[in-house]
Image (tube, rainbow, N blue to C red; front, side, top):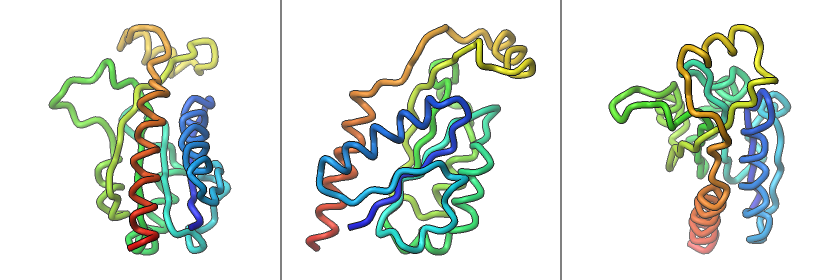
Length: 165
């Protein structure tokens, strides 16, 4: 079974999450292509796709959201999971977080998972720095790689079940 793991990542934190997911799937015997969303022309040749994006101002990266929108019809015929990486520690339970839920519906995703992100203040542009100062999130890396790998293991189990169904 050929699986695509692709991400929209600006500074690399989401790319590291995607790499961890791809590694778990490879360890489970799947043929995995791992790429930035901007480098994926089509999902046509994949049996399953895991698509993730960093979230900025409630929006997915344009390359990742465009990949989902432009391939939505093909994605609906495959096993698909989406994940978002962002500052989940500063959101409120009833707050709409980003456009990912709409994308998940468009793609017929099995699940959309949210993971905490990280802020590398020194890498941010002036506008991002101003926004971060206004929001004042706690500093640190909030990515939980144990949780990320456990989620990827559940995907691997589901794909194995589907392969033998």
